[in-house]
Image (tube, rainbow, N blue to C red; front, side, top):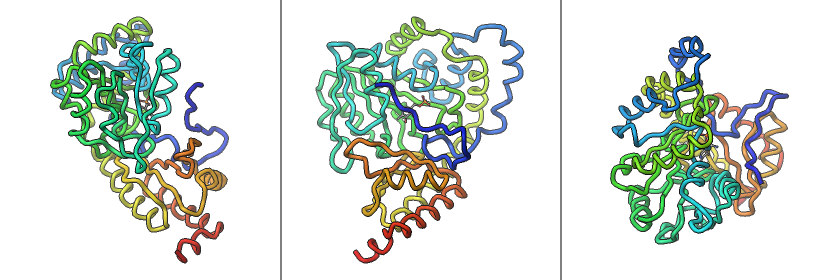
Length: 350
Ligand code: PMP
């Protein structure tokens, strides 16, 4: 079964809080190198992504050969399934996590174990120790927003010295500590990241990986066997400019974190269960209205959120943190829906 992306509506203007894009546009300076890239667009782009890797090395303190760029982080995740899993070395990831992991596993003929999260959606770290599989963990996880500590991740890395552990940090800039500092300590660690969330660049399709030079070499073997020109010249140019705007990126992340704190407080005040999300989305469920019903009623009123049908999470919705104005409209709409559905009086009488 292919991955089902979140809806990208064309027919109607929605408040779009369903695919965890950044609430803010990229910094104005992001256009800085585009003109020059266009003027050289008759040439293939640099397959080594030299300038981007150099800039990222300077930002992270890693060596350039510990860095790879890919077409979104979906591509590096697929590469990791291709490079580090096979029929004998299967994959392991939580039962509730990013929906592309099982799709990539199936596509590549990799057997996989979906390890149940605990009742409270936390990862049972002991379940990932000495399991002889390539491990994929999103940190923070999606759609729960919950994160693992450095101690937990080091325990998993240490307990699986002969297997690669992939830490998917798509949302790490919104509050979680980053495992990038462990790359020089653990040969078996691959950290993946993306410009799609904290760097306001979902449309650029830029992802990356940090790992030991040996693992990056393996990933490059796959990349050169599929598409060495996976990063087009315009994305490369815009990506470089975005990396030169770290202060703007941090400011947008701080604004989103502030809006997230306010949203969690407001949803809890309305009677919702709300996880302690460390990402740019919240994960919420109300005791008196089903997840799918709330999703539909919000859509009818012009607001798109993401509902997932698996039994364990069918009562939840994942809602991207938008601008403060968008979140205000969302909250007012949710209040109206709860009133219409008589949920407010039920909650007050409890
Ligand atoms: N990992 C996780 C956990 C995600 O939610 C997403 C976004 N859907 C991705 C990776 C991939 O994002 P992109 O390909 O845009 O980098």
